[in-house]
Length: 89
Ligand code: SF4
Ligand code: SF4
Image (cartoon, rainbow, N blue to C red; front, side, top):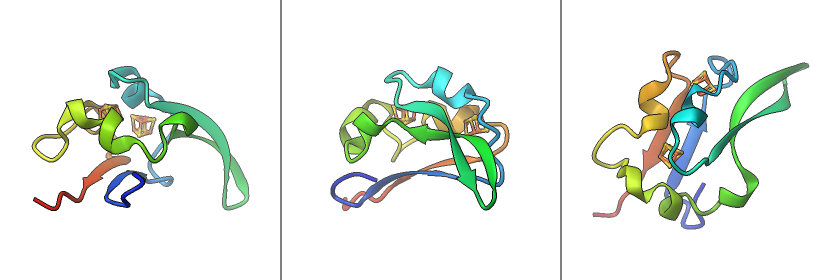
């Protein structure tokens, strides 16, 4: 989530298997696979790197996600990642 609360990368933990295809396509290396607990199971899921949290508006700007599907979303065959850009324009 961006500091403005208007920019989000949403991962569906039911669909994501941590394959990192999206991370490999990201020109800014924003994403990484991490182990985390989902319900009572440890899973490998994609996540936004700590240093990029609250900065998505800036680091993802080159993908212009309000106009087209960004590479991270377009590459995921499982439809597990979504980019939400709540532009006020
Ligand atoms: S969001 Fe999709 S491409 Fe990215 S790690 Fe998860 S399953 Fe793979
Ligand atoms: S929108 Fe672009 S810069 Fe942002 S995570 Fe996706 S591929 Fe990377």
